[in-house]
Length: 477
Image (cartoon, rainbow, N blue to C red; front, side):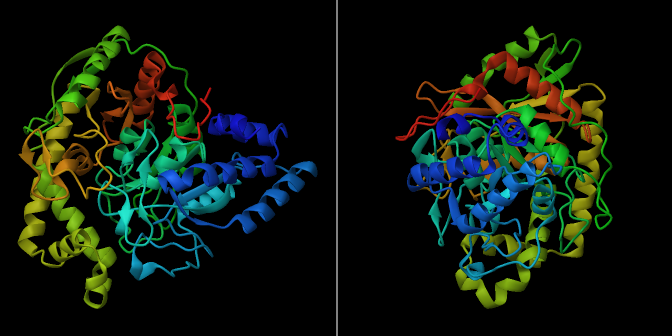
């Protein structure tokens, strides 16, 4: 029974519970059993509250038995990323400074999941303060990849990605500033979706006008992304950037892409280093889009201003969020976090003037590109899943990476544009490691983004290939 439940998509599991084909208690039993089986190998789940989850599961079944109305995720067990606030449940941000932090409120994304009926069971691992695209921290150690547990699961939503890929849960919440959904999506053969600004308002927020970081979702396929986003998307009066629902997440069957104009870039027009094997895996996918009716050619927006926009905005956001902790706790912060906060605290008026000018030029370049093309394709990550004992890859194709952000530029450059983007399963290496394809569309063109990704995944079927851990996980339908 447990393996059968683990094989279900999110929409199948939720539907089965609502129809009472599966009880919420059976779903929770399967969830907890899978954690017990695989978490010693991948270290994805770092906080667990099984006692409260059992009580909620019993209440969920009783509610259904009484004939009461059930939400779209009624009784579905789910852990949450450990930088999303969970009321009454420890939220550590992967930092010793926050080891005993128990929030008194939920983040909006968690509040909406709970309102839809999710049974919160625990938290998934993150790098310290979600800094970096490899999930390790001094509190809980390293999360590893279900496709090869000696390798990275990516980050910062690496715990969530490893949990989903290994069958612990069908889908989950995450966030993405510099690839934190796309990198683990690529490394773990999932769809990692970073939506347009305002689709999921990020509340509570020290800076409600922040724009470069987004909350989003990870799932095995696009239909589960849509299903989850129908719960999560929508405006909130406390957020000045939130946008109204527009039907972008309604179910849509895969189809042809006739007439679509697609640009492909391997190096983002900037000579960005990408491992040869990554490009070799992705190359056949370009032909898939052509077979679906699209026109594909080498093209990329001018991203020459994107590094400055990303680095200045990121530094400011880190200083805003964590600057108050630096003076008292510097010795307990990892170097990468110190570096980001220090860089933010040192920003001058001229730095902001220069970054705003760069952002204006970047916006004009993006507008020009999308006046001629509908979609941009690129590598989601510059490297294959790497040795999990490393902090980050020191070189790519023999070129040194000067900072821990350099190997993430494939994601960071796109983040700087503010555009909606995702990583979709793009193929496998000869040794069985997943590689993600990054798809980008114009601002607020999320419906097109998901339609293109859905057509590609249906044509290729890469998302159906599951990892083989020592304790095997069932294949999804």
